[in-house]
Image (cartoon, rainbow, N blue to C red; front, side):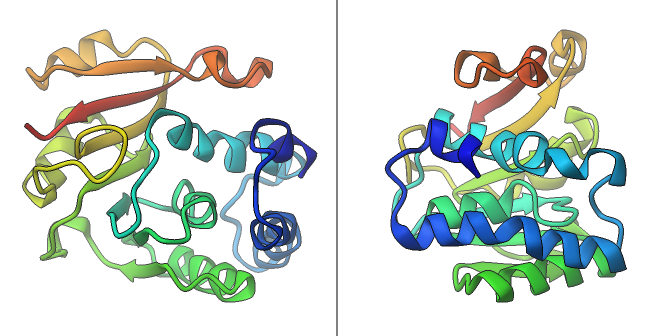
Length: 207
């Protein structure tokens, strides 16, 4: 929890309570359904919560923005982002039912009213969003095919509507295959921990 306050010191009392409660809630759920690797569960705040919040360093969503998290797993990045942006509506989608059960349980435990867990394939979601977020769920060309038509043009945050994707390593070849223009933000510019050295937020606008 201290790690979150180190980079986000201006949280409200309710946000502090919710971030503090994440560890216990995920520990309880992880004992039933393994959605966070047991070997790095002690690093939950670093490797999952703070990593998710790198998106908040790149783009601040406006109140009323609609954000889709594709392949959310146990709720990353959507759950930490829903705490950070209580006036933004998040849809957390995953094709694996037990992972959505974790998102439902954690969200209920936190008292989050702005996150909508959704079980099913993202292609089946017949709605429009301002932003799509994800964390290394598939190769970018495939990902773009899934979601590009679901993004509405406009600007509901500090960046124009588009994709904000958490990914690591050398991305040049993979991004080139999409034939789109991408901006890469080094997470190490925001967070000093060694874990983030090779990790990036990858962004493209819907223009």
